[in-house]
Image 1 (cartoon, one colour):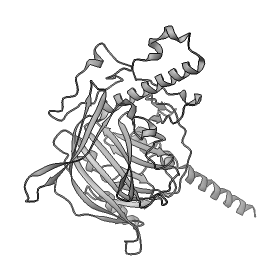
Image 2: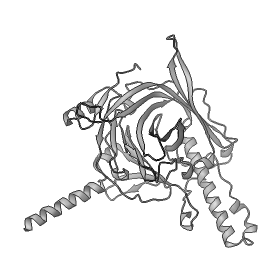
Image 3: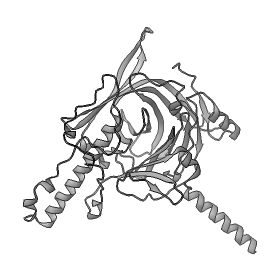
Image 4: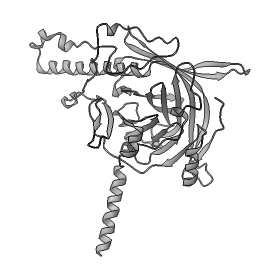
Length: 422
């Protein structure tokens, strides 16, 4: 796909211009707007894949994965539904996915590749001799290990394979518009590949990021490895910043580049043979200062060694529809809508020690997905990964109101009533 000119979109541009951008066929333009100030306490629930349907049939499938950051008794409510379901004879002896052709099909149903063998259940003879504290400690460890393995299974089902696509970088430039507006400018676009496979003997997963750049002499594309990582079941914990939920994965990184501290939060969403990955990059020059949004990296990929074309609507179709459930946003978040049905919400600033959230909303064909990565502080830990799945048409009919907007509207109505009484 040919590289396109770098567009720059200004915050607060006229509505007519925004509509023009939304209808434009160019797959790499976007616009940045100020979102309403919203803050809502999220109700945490245990993992569940059962659809929740209202009386009108408005089924919204939600899945929440909660970080286990303490060992209090009330933290024991981890539901490991599906961790062992569908495990037939010999299932745990399956070979790793064949990546020769870059295809790792996504299994359906509740089958698992691995089954965690519980010490708690295998050593029943010892149970009667254990004290309450030791018994509770074993139970907690058993639940944690089972949940770790369950999340690794989810990751293996959804993310393994060779993925090829187009990676685009967007950089916010404050006060660079004609009237001092913030401009979101595409600063780079290139081809990339993500190689991911599971190690079924070591019960781990490994991946690497590869960019494809032209040689200096104008020759063919050359692969350049830009990152590698290996994860085990114990890697999927909130305090380590990584979690999986159904077709979604999220992780984070905190590192130093010289004296500059860099905080990165990633969200991956898969639908069929397509996948969208977004990395939100924040930087801080000093531990005494808050993190500032530095870059957003959007990766649109297709399963296999051949990348997607600009004609594929799942990745380069109409613009995103905004954020379906806006109540996870933090006050003052920016909302960015891109072609391919993609919308992002992220705060321009992350104060240290304060709650934050980055959100990806992706409409892909007949389904719409929203993934919220919520954290108590920008230190690489994860409070919860919350996933919403709903049919594309249903999302237009059954909407979720913004709690903050509802409160403002109610206050305004009350003021009008009082004025009438006078």
